[in-house]
Amino acid sequence: MRVELGKAGALRGKLSPPADKSISHRAVLFASIAQGQSVIRNFLRAEDTLSTLGAVKMLGVEVQEGPEEVLIHGRGLRGLREPQDVIDCANSGTTMRLLCGLLGAQGFFSVLTGDASLRRRPMDRVAQPLRAMGATIQGREGGRYPPLAIQGGALKGIQYRMPVASAQVKSALLLAGLYAQGPTKVLEPLRSRDHTERMLRAMGAELSVQEGWIGISAPQSLHPLEGTVPGDFSSAAFFLAAALMVPGSELLIENVGVNPTRTGLLQALRRMGARVELLDERELFGEPVADLLVRYSGPLKATDIEPQEVPLMVDEIPVFSVLAATAQGTSTIKGAQELRLKESDRLSAMAQGLARMGIKVEEYPDGLSIQGGGLKGATLESFGDHRVAMAFSVAALAAEGTSSIEGAEAVEVSYPDFYQTLRRLLR
Ligand code: S3P
Image (cartoon, rainbow, N blue to C red; front, side, top):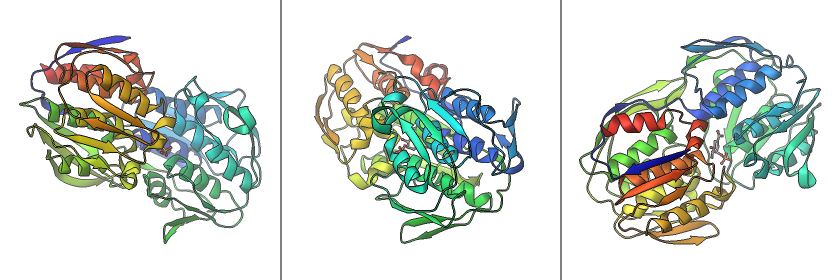
């Protein structure tokens, strides 16, 4: 699908972003192994999280889907069943990596695959430590790439220093740790999102954190979940950016998760001189939530993203690079090599598109340097990546002339009504 967008007048009004993708995946997956029925309200119905829902159904979990809530009849820690067919994780790295942790501990055989993008993404980062725990995981190219064949079994706890900061790897190992003999401990080089830790604790798992090491031991059982998934900060970020790039804009973005392990973009925006207010800060489903009031704040100033900030805004780097392209001065992003291993190579995708829009961009193995300037309309490729499609859509609103976004259907992965919401706010 191609979407054409031109220079926009002010964006005004209210919106509620879709439910948090990371939390929706986890809620469904963890509820499947709880003892009893979980009630999950505001579950994200988008392609990625529907992959996780499809997967748990294939593992024998009964799911009731209503308009307001999803009921998951947890089968207990030992109640999952061998799937009858290959589990298709489609575009979802979170589905595949978290499932590896869970399935590596089940006494049965399963096969995981995905779309062309997911089949290019490295799985050895989860497979290798899970093998050290006792799981058998095979895949293409020496076990690195999907499809993956998993024979689960009895696991033993390990202590593992993760080479990359990754919430997906951390979560997979903590899930496996629920089944392992002896404690499992993981250490991240930098802090990544902590939704798994929060949710497993709420379910009664014993989780310890000492000097950065996150430890877990096998519980007797997990309590079911009941709660409402907050809105996704990563989806809200596109409208934050749009309001900050189009003069006269003012948006109230309601019910947004503001977990500090997710909101690195807000710190960067403050340095750039943006006005974003957090209103009515509260808690939902064990997560901090607020309404975000954002007003066009005049031209933004360039800023530098340092490596330690990257995990706190890992999914916002594409939209940050668009903001940087309109800022005064040169912005840099360092330590973001992980971006090359996402749904697309996001550093290269953004460098290519921004260059087409007339921006001076330098690409490095681990980042970008972006000289702010006037954006010109162009034909922009999503590379099948939802966040790239949305980042370029926002860029188009601030560009002279018309832009077309090729492969815009990718937004279905995390934000199915992105374009409807955009058009409503532009009226
Ligand atoms: C996610 C973690 C991040 C993020 C992804 C979702 C999660 O990936 O980029 O979109 O839900 O755990 P990594 O943990 O691989 O950095």
